[in-house]
Amino acid sequence: MGETAVYARLRPGASASAVETRLADFVRRRAVLTQLPEDVRAGFLTLRLDPVPAIHLQVKTFNQRKMGGDVGTLGILSVAALLILGVAIANYTNLATAQAINRAREVGIRKLAGARRWQLVALFTGESVGLAMAATLAALAMVEVSLPAFQALVDRSFGIAPLLHGGLLAVVLGTPLAVGGLGGLYPALVLSGYRPAEVLKGSVAPAAGRLRGVLVVAQFAISIALIIATATVLRQVEHARTAKLGFLPENLYMVSDLPFDAHRAATMKAELAKLPGILGATFSGLAPGSIDQSMSLMTVPADAHGATPGQTYIAEFSADPDFIATYGVELKAGVALPPGWRPPAEGGGAMSG
Image 1: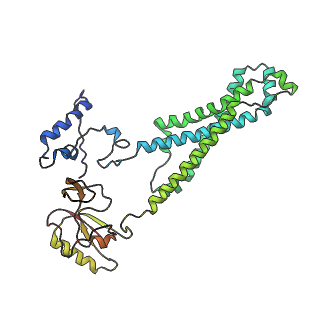
Image 2: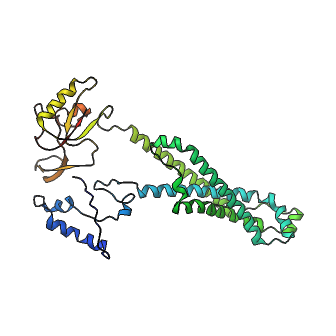
Image 3: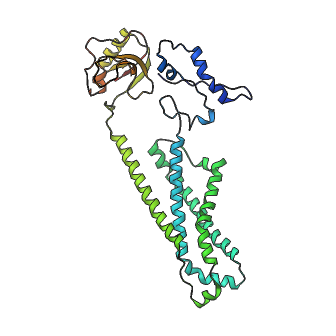
């Protein structure tokens, strides 16, 4: 059981939602599903409409796997990036506010020369924006330098060119403006609020307040949360990398979509067994981890232990007697295929060895 994609163009002015509501009735009238019980017939074959622009990030296949990227993952990464930027903004605000006393004399002289407060706010905020822009350029340079190593790590080829076009360019240009503005606004307000008389007398006290305390606490809280999240993800990746699959994938190769014939299959296996380095070969309808499924209707007897009596559908696939040994599968219960068993004479298959 799998999923087939069909592209359809709607008539001008047609409503996609109205068309989709009629698909269930179309399946009920046209699909040959009379051999299935009523409770499973509706879920066995379903049709839906997905807009083409949503295919890459939002559309899920029948088995709930993504066809392309994952908008949920992008959302999580975006939140993590915003939290990191928030830590940077809080850190800059705290440092700039703490060092404001060192620029108090400059503020006093500028005010004596006629500078107004809004001009000082614009000056100090502009400095933080300029620093953020310089940091953005440095970050882009570091990305460009580290790209070859990262491409080798993820086995993908890409560059930073998409960041310099369209909507992503607006994000690249707008981020330093937003970060610099948010990080520099409060220190600018603190600096511009100094009075020239107090500055010249040397009676200006370091800026302090609740905002700085809140920023420090928030900065450390976000940092701890990101560290915990990173450690959790690393452990999950390590588990996925080292977890047992239930079979031995090393040195296992599969040839798919073979035209199946019992006599030719036996001949192919016999010839492969003669080749040096091949330990075994097997034929099967599917391979472990395949997204496709075949369903069979099974009857659960009334005296079954721990199961609900009646008919139920289970996923199944056919395999020859060498499947267990070739894949190195450890049976949890039951026995392997009996000697002399042969798959059906019709249908396609795949060979693994």
